[in-house]
Image (cartoon, rainbow, N blue to C red; front, top):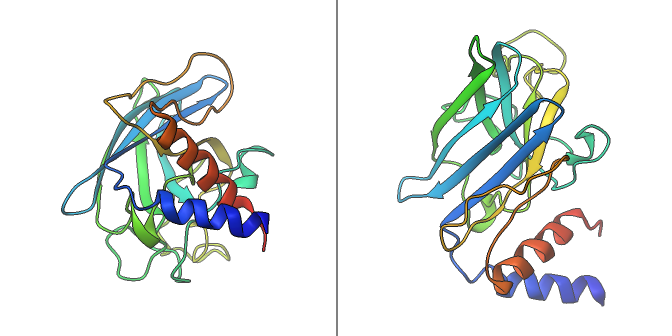
Length: 204
């Protein structure tokens, strides 16, 4: 009965159109903020992450909004269509496959991605799911490793955070340690984000 109640509330909440989302990333010396803006063409992903080792890092949306066990609780890549891992521009890819970001000599990665597959609404919605930045480069499914078609052989998970709804221009991350999800404004949006995250982590 409780699960049905949560489902009903989530279904009601999704009637609202989400236009902007945010994720706050924090682990050790790594910290950053990424925003997601819904457009007519898809989603624009922008932000800055500080403290990453120089080089390329796999950058993905994972299926669960759970950050425990060094981000392992976030599960695998968001893949509702049950496809192999690939590059963002590939026809065959996970919904959550956003390729690589690049950290420069100052350990700063500037993120600027336009993606037509992820969404802030509907069946490909990333709200309540997790962003994960990996230790190594994503081979985009083109490598010869056993996990190339599932993870892109991108290695360990360095930092993660839960994607939540941003409203009324709120794009600030709370201060303090830990991977904190989202600060939003408006009780309706807070209710939706919390219930939707709970729904994603329920096992039926």
